[in-house]
Image (tube, rainbow, N blue to C red; front, side, top):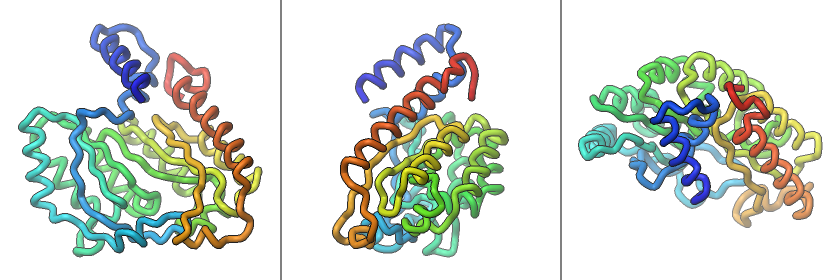
Length: 270
């Protein structure tokens, strides 16, 4: 991360000097977290019950913060000169599900705040992108939504079913590609995990196919770990550690080539 942040400072300095840079490079660098970003927590807990995740077990169902203190915190941050605002929660898109409101209402309140700032949204699960897509695009046209992290986890429908993610891969891929066209200024980031029980080589290739078919500005690779309190711990067809490591290396290599080298399209967006 220190190396990436150092490169980031150089890229942004060259950009300010109007140095001709590849179009994708400042986007990729802007997707990385910076220690100076201002974080606003909007809630705790999760509505999903993913087979591999212990968040629901540890923190329970969603408990959303009230909109008023969130807006007040944003105004205070902007007044102090913060320009990069991160919305964080275990499941940001579930905000308001416990209070009769919804995530888009939260965003509408935040983008209405005056000032020069951009919002980075963390942990926006695919089910919420699918549910709120049209309304989200309208809010994003305010130019105050800079990035979203949509953790896809896998490109395989079979593995998604084993994970109990509640959606299929092609609909969310289509929406992310549509988003890249409708609001191209919004950076799209994701997470992918290898080694989930039932994942075969063909399933893994499906994940690599998604990386090739969607423009991501950032991808976090991970290896499945069977937490003892989760359903995945007792599943059949566990993947060997050696296979997990192998797939993780291939995944990471593909991410480096796809994101940081833009698959060889150095002077334009893929």
